[in-house]
Image (cartoon, rainbow, N blue to C red; front, side, top):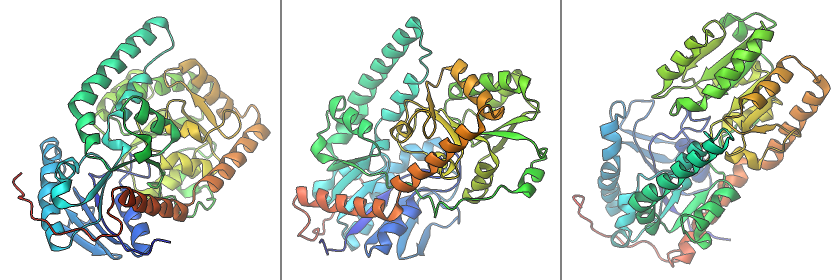
Length: 427
């Protein structure tokens, strides 16, 4: 058993965990798990909900480099700010490993030999998510398939040669969520499988207790008691992802007057989605509350009959969908997303091609109209069973720590303390 206590630096912008549409970040739950195991954890991130530049809590030191909203110009400068802050902290107390949950630590990676530190990235640091997003626009026609293939190929080569190749050269390890991502990383991004680790550690699911539907919450939303709710979560980065759902809902609501669609989240394409919704004359049937907190999200999940997330862009698992499965809800996900590793078609949920509007209409209608109540009930039971068996936060954290040890061991850093090094912060 490894007894060495590690000094770990977690780096990343605000990456969301209760789905990328809420205000709950993944860095703190992850840091808590590592700290509870006795390791020294430091966070370098953008902004804090507490609006403080430094937070010392739960044995964790967190440094937030922005005192206001993270604008586009600030995001572009974030790796430079991370580098400067890390250089100061590392000089005082050297770190064993830097874990970057996106590409924010790439500049540290470029200078890792001078720092004498090991650097690992999440798959989110690559452009793999964007490739899945493009693939999801394939409607199945020959023309669409050719167009999508050309766009994927062009985007891959552009991204790989401009970014991924140089970034992966600085990586001592890469964390993936599913075996599918691991295979793609080796086969197309040419990153050795020997240095890849599959650990879905970023999910903070609480105790997965079954929750009762809140009548007061439905009243607060001004919904009738017999309302049937379709719940969707989005980061509103690509408006095209939600178009099939809105168009399918337009058909479903014509036959079901008590049906409502709630789309949670916020992002750059929020107005575009709202315009499309109004264009389809769905204003009285679609609710878009914007970003919400983790507790309120659970209330929405408890309220819904069916949960839909057709995003293929996410390279991680959406915990909101996992939570919906834990609450025995009928879930519909993208066959291109990582959730496809956990959903067995018609057994514990449903998978569709994101642009397949016809299939989506059939599924939503079947659930809303309760065509086979007993069958759907069994699917919900099996969905919860799958989640309970597959996701254990403590096991995930332990797997992550063992991966840290393995990375350090492979690069000869496990048995030697990192040497202090002086690196100019102006590099």
